[in-house]
Amino acid sequence: MTSSKRLLITVMVSIFAGELLIMLLLHIVPITSPYLEMLTDALLLTFFVFPAIYFFSFRPLNAYISEISLSEENRRQWEERFRKAIIYSPYQIMIHAEGEVLQLSDTWTEISGYTIDDIPTIYEWAKRAYGKNELDGEALKVIDKVYELTGSDKQHDGEWPIITKDGETRQWDFSTASLGILPDGRRVVITMAVDLTKRKQAEIEFQEAKEEAEAANKAKSSFLSRMSHELRTPLNAVIGFAHLQEKLFEESTPKDLRVSRDHILQAGHHLLALIEDVLDLVKIEQNKIDIPLEDIDLDTVIKESLSLVQGLAADNSIKLMHVQTGFSVKANSNRLKQVLVNLLSNAIKYNRESGSVTLLAKEIEQGQIEIAVEDTGVGIDPDEREAVFTPFSRLAYAEKSEIGGTGIGLALSKFLIEQMEGSIGFDSAPQQGTVFWVRVPQGKAIDKTLSLENDHPTVLNVAQTVLYIENDLASRQLLEMILAQHPGLRLLVASTAEEGIEIAKQILPDLIFFDINLPGISGLDALKILKSDPKFNNTHMVALSADAMPNQIEKAMNSGFDHYLTKPINANQIIAAIERLQRN
Image 1 (tube, one colour):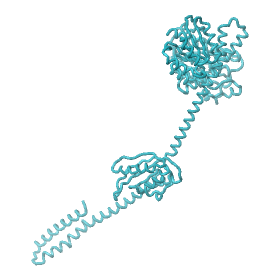
Image 2 (cartoon, helix red, strand yellow):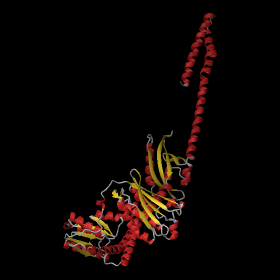
Image 3 (tube, helix red, strand yellow):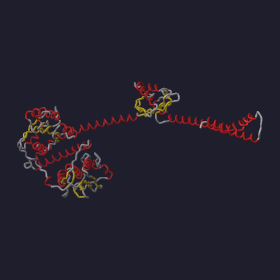
Image 4 (cartoon, helix red, strand yellow):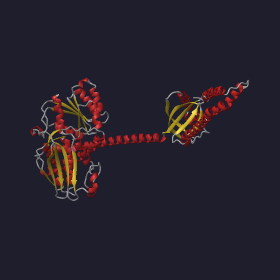
């Protein structure tokens, strides 16, 4: 209830009560006088109305006035608190009304360098902060729009580069919202900003680092591609001709020459294995390694693995021992063989003189087969255990003893085994030898007669015309010698893509082998030219290249090759490609 209403009610009640009391007194004490009514009114006002007004009205009014004074003090206190909250805020804050800057936080001044005296209006701020970037006009358009936010709960956001008082360019993220209308009718807004300069600089540095890493990775891939090509091309001749000599002239070759030939093959395959390991790491990085699993005969894989390290064992006077397992496992034959060869090679290299390497297999639990390679070597120091499966990490003993290796074999083996749903580990003690074990899922029983591979290529008698486009003379001669063992196959060769295209158009061969890195027109371009001619719709086209990089293989297959073979040339693969052609 307001004070005026309370006063009116108090006066009316007091008069009514006073009149009742006077009337009662007149009935008790009869008085007759012309001044009686005036006297009665005076008494009423003096003793009843005025005291009532004082006690019932003026005292509450004084209290109300005190309340108003107290509210004004609270308001001033809250305004001071709000002002300090803005000034000492860790963020850049500006309060402005219709262009006039009312308040700035210290952080705004600290970062931008501008005080409220420097930028008394928002237009002065726009001129100073955006003028040198010629953004002041655009900024003012945005500023005019933010005042239109009055009466809504919307806000305006945006990133802008500002020029500080010292001339430095910084990136700020602005957010503006309405605070309502001032008593003088001006629209007032609050603008908050966050300095993004460090974050933007970090993003730029990250992007630069990313681009630098991508460039380095691209350079690495390019180098590995060239390395693969440059190493595989001579290896093609070394391994290819040695293998042919073994197949064609085994009986007529003296024993000492056979030993020399075997050393050549062993060294060639060792170098090829190193190249394959490096390329496998690239495939892992690019997530382009495919490991299909199947039920395989473990004894067959072990036999092939041991045969590949027999020469190394003989050179180091190491005795190899193993026991027939009778197990089948679910794995990838080539990849499991790659792992076992790596473990066996390490067991031989890190062994003592005239030591031994034992390969055993056992069922450790339902559905798991453990293959163990045990040596009698120097063992692994406890301090080096954690680094065993780290890429390019080599044991101290290997460095001191100049034992060959790249340090990637075990890291690659771990990846391959895990991709085959298995695990790998080891137990070792210094000077007491090491046992590396591999655990893989047990496979279904298989018919071993179906898994036996014919060591000699099928003899082909069906008439086929084969064109080989290759600039390396040794590679051409090697393929000529391989196909010479198969009556009916006619081989044509070309040293350039241009020459090969002309021959192909004249002869229409059944099968064309392309080298990729050719002088002039590349093998890929030659393929496109021939594929565009309907006459070659039935011609089988196979890439035969020393470039084994995953991206190169993928690019070639996407270009339209029917198959991609990598050097060194494998006679069985060549004949298999021709057999596929015949079946098709």
